[in-house]
Length: 285
Image 1: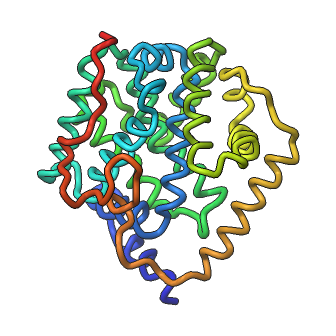
Image 2 (image 1 turned 180 degrees about the vertical axis):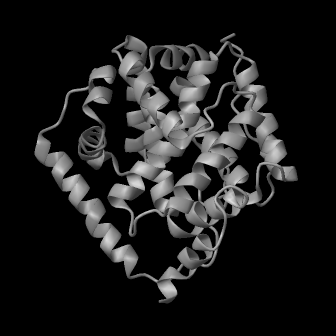
Image 3 (image 1 turned 90 degrees about the vertical axis):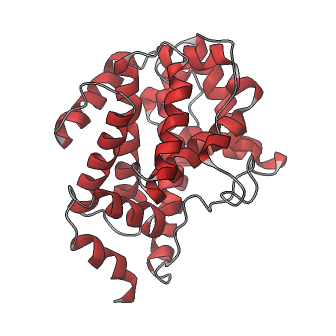
């Protein structure tokens, strides 16, 4: 069937040697919306760790420029996926990422944890809400892709085994997901950002819907009030209905990565370089 043209291509590739191409097809053609939404929640998840939320609060970026910080992260990662981490634009994007991280005292374990969310949160989301299940090739390719990115970011002790890294992620969350005021404030700034993308009248609905999609451990770490269970049931049902619709749509032929519209850099990538991105703050060291 034409709908599975990309899947046949993915199945013919090696998840180690060809991981960049597999991730490019999977994230840019097969599941662009799912990757975008799952990574939004993946970053949200990292703010449940007080050392991470505390650093972000000290930079002031979330309070002053939440949309810019969101767009910087999304576009820089899209550059790596679309062009490859060792391409000229990919290396330029990594220099921006490393420059920003290098200005702050971030523990290797926190960096390792954030990296793990880029691998496993999209995989888990797509397994639940994607229009088709992910293949073994796609899962392993994501692991090898972000492991290579993490190595180029100077992150140490990245597990070499898919299951071992997932186990690290689960253990880190069990130990470090605890309530902190900085979690709540950064979480609320992010929740307000998500709500700002919709008409003001929908803010209460969007806010409750987003919180309903969070794991109970995240809700507790943020100190949010949990919405009624039926809100989450309706949200998950809507996502599964969407998957049925997408499954019947024509196969996507044009990458939807750096060309995805964003609010900070209109028309990106036309007229922009990765080096034009990156938040500016001197308040945290």
